[in-house]
Length: 144
Image (cartoon, rainbow, N blue to C red; front, side, top):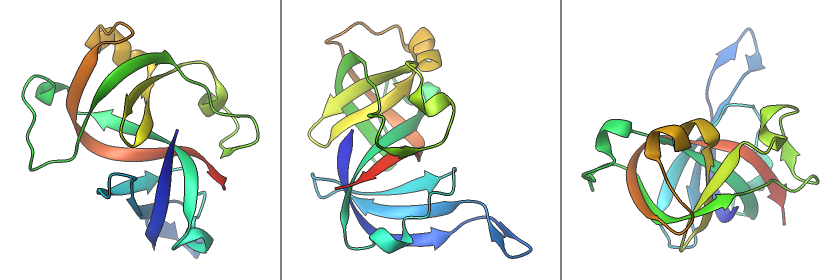
């Protein structure tokens, strides 16, 4: 989990007046800004200029795990094994609460990695990893 200052929220997909998802611009503790896809439609527009705790999944670009392109978003950190989302957090009903999540910890907190990614990356607890990110997905959040 990590702390994120919500800077802006844009509406993503919209059809016949219904909003399906959002894009969040947030600032991490390291002062880096990242754009996050709110695929579950949590709608954090009322959290702009506030800090929230959140679970974010970086979507790994597998062809870029050996050489990092610094012109693209990237994550580097230590693999910390299983992570869980607290039950009082706002999340989708299904897969987010399951125990299929592992973590990569760095100065910003813990980013969530799905168990399927582990089969490709072959990580052990304590391993250092760095990889480019296609996009960041918001899995769950908590208003501090």
